[in-house]
Length: 348
Image (cartoon, rainbow, N blue to C red; front, side, top):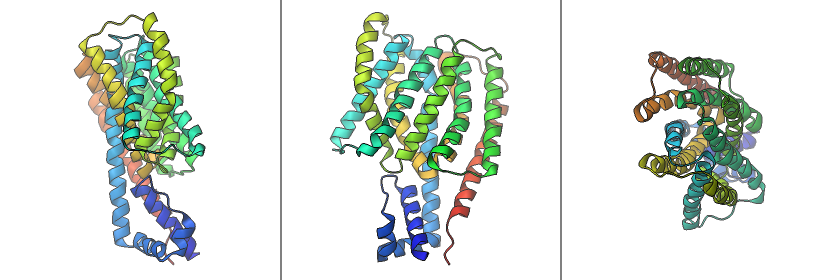
């Protein structure tokens, strides 16, 4: 029994500290090194290391949220120069070229065959599905209205993550997550005047495919570095993106300007590659459910960027909603930390 507990503790610490490392439980339990690692996990030093890894994961996931919050304004800029299909295709091509170059430079071997199905889900969700559906929606919706998707995304991701990865957040976590989703939805609907548009079908479709991509990416980031997860997903989508570019560019008008080029560069390099890299690494460290709730802040950040970059109006209710969302985020993170401590095996 002690050997089994030691193996569990060793594996848990390794995953939290470095998502690229997954030690074999048998070897950890049967070797002196495994026993030593298990002892350190039960010691104050082990607890301090786990706490440090949790803080690092929260920071990384938070940086991902900041990067994602610029996606809608950058997409609106990109649409000044490109049609929706051209923008999505070029975004994926550029991001895949960046990712492929990094993978080649680092001489990263191909992922194991068992991981390709998961990478296809990541690619279909966050590389193709979400960008395409939200870009189509932004032709008729403002960025403020489109933020309702992100308002529901944290809760949807937490639900799918619980089903897919076996995470079991506490009741306090779910109460805080539901409260946060309610605050964000109420605020974004009020901000958009409560009107539904034809783009809402695109937005709700984007919500589902993105949550699936986030969940699968968070799971894969436990067995390979986060940048490799999004890197290989982008490379997998490259043939489709190139074909889409060749078809869309001749059919849609192109009017290059500074906004359009900057928007394209950001959604390709910032949102798609760098943002997803830190996001998946943070998810691997603190779990899909806890990381997803940090996105409750994303709609409010998007509204700030829309005000600063696009000149859209900012509601007087924004500060109140911001405080309520921050309280809900703090509650979900605290509930997640407490659940993590309670689930650690006690040394007998």
